[in-house]
Image 1 (cartoon, rainbow, N blue to C red):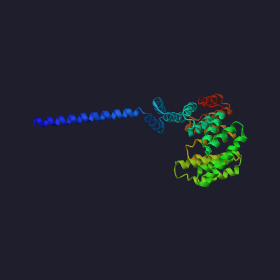
Image 2 (image 1 turned 90 degrees about the vertical axis):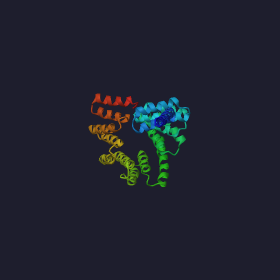
Image 3 (image 1 turned 120 degrees about the horizontal axis):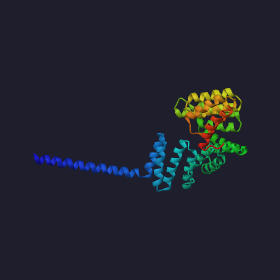
Image 4 (image 1 turned 180 degrees about the vertical axis):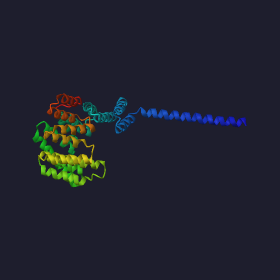
Length: 327
């Protein structure tokens, strides 16, 4: 009887030892995995999705420290740039993207992102240079032609801007011919036509975008519809139909209550109408949703200045400049 108990005890001890060894091996493997760039890059991406942005930056920094290949370095710097952009730290995002560009100048999306970030900071010449590179590497990307057109327009190079808008229309017509139910393509066409001051045609394009968007289908379809209503509102404002424009923005917000672009655009029209208090209220709504976009703070500052609220105006403009905005 005693021998049997000893035998059972020995078996239990052996099982316990094997269990401990297995757990130790699992821990060793886990620790080894945690020391790979791939682990930290994946972790950083997950943390971005969870909006744990500071933690994601730490994860990407860990990946950068131990990355062995240029591909891993590029992925880590790009991830860090995205996290910084989400936080509204645009100048730092630009620098992170620059590090990725040094490692791989042909990384397609980086140049487009740089163009967008520079434009958001009012650094239009640098935006143009970035879009130049983006167009060289991917010549049929509509958003790059439109982005460069906007930057050119903001530097007074309207003739060059018009050519970019016209080129975007050529690409969009091909896209629409292939899929006439592409709401975003119709909206982009409306945008380009508006910039070319072809307002009637722009309204038709936006109406088509609204028609095919199917806002009740899902969240993204709702955003597409709100984008189209916002674009339509901007065209109506350019035609001096301000009340109709405001109604269009309200429709966009009704469909997608967190679509801050519509609130900002409504604020812009209210500014044009001299309704500064109402404009500030719209900018505040936009800021509540997207507090890290410096351009909104700057516009709010201009509205406050129009009301002779100098102290508040200076604070809003200073906030925009803290985020890197240059007027």
